[in-house]
Amino acid sequence: MVVALEAKGLTKEFKGFVAVNNIDLSVEKGTIHALIGPNGAGKTTCFNLLTKFLQPTRGTISYEGLDITRMKPAEIARLGLVRSFQISAIFPDLSVLQNVRVALQRARGESYDFWRSDKILSKFDDQARTHIDEVGLTEFTHERAAALPYGRKRALEIATTLALSPDMLLLDEPMAGMGREDVDRIAQLIRKIALNRTVLMVEHNLSVVADLSDRITVLARGEILAEGTYAEISKAPEVIEAYIGASHD
Image (tube, rainbow, N blue to C red; front, side):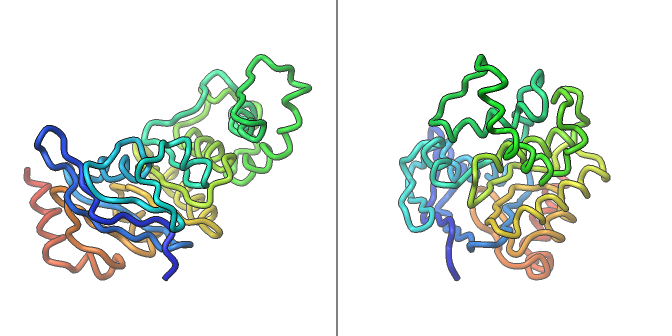
């Protein structure tokens, strides 16, 4: 197994409360790996640790064999490790094309020059259109982002993420707030973009997890409860108990 992202002894304490406790996690390169668990399991904290939006109390994180434990989010993004957010992070008053073009400006050296003329920024248009087509938004290229249906906004966010040339995508609840049609569309999109990338996602929709994931890690009370394929973890008594117990809390 070639490991893309690995955590060892990952622990996060908040004023004496242990939110994540001694987690060892390995995400195999070229797979879709899901992080699931009932409410309060520590998924979000773990995800924020792995994406460097939180610093661990103890433990280490490595990406492609490089220790990234103390790096900042922008630094790991430049390494090819890029995350999305549960709340859509786009510029609502810019068009779909302009949103992706802003992300592509990273190629100019971290300069995001909104005031530059369209003529100067148009050199990014062909690449932007490629990413827009990749996520199925070609017909919305010139629409204001704010006018897009919710599922299309999430697709646009993925397009802007792809513009950062990621080798690994970390998706924070990509199906949150979606109807069935949008869930199916975004699931197909994730499967498509994962063909030549590694994906780690936090997701509540277990049917999506079952359909997409090569491997699943189940968290409960800040610790790993089980790990394996969906067929394996869905039959594990401790996993069944954790989810049934959570539904009655």
